[in-house]
Length: 194
Image 1 (tube, rainbow, N blue to C red):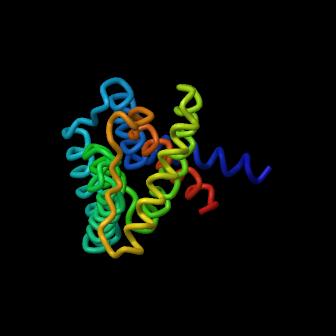
Image 2 (image 1 turned 90 degrees about the vertical axis):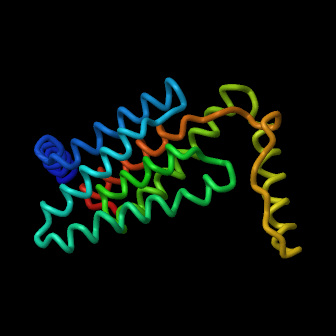
Image 3 (image 1 turned 120 degrees about the horizontal axis):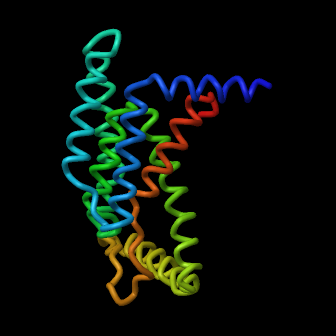
């Protein structure tokens, strides 16, 4: 019975909380856009981040604490994905989308959202590879990348984590994973699980 009460409370909160509604709407639009065109529009990420920064600053008990939380979440979301963009694994839109979500969530929740996003990304990559009958190829790529990084680390040189296009299993619209991972984190947080 406790779970039902928590679920009803969550649904009521989602229906009345402007920040959560805006975040879910932006994540939904980003996921659909990424699915259709492999692009996440800048107006969405920059506009969403601006809304989150202003709203977070003005709606907090003190504007300084609200601004610190919003800017801290933005920085955590951006920094956590930037390394994957730098090695060519992720697109710039994905980095900006996670930064935008971070501005809504604050730094601590953003770290958990990134973790949930990586889990969603792993599940999606496995499903994608299985669907395309390329699971063996994907596992070979993971093995090759891990070996390359281990050898580079032992040799003291910077690893090259990028794969050649002809070696790729395919392109995954990661905006879906960011949307799913962030939504699950928000729901789990509201239910008190994280």
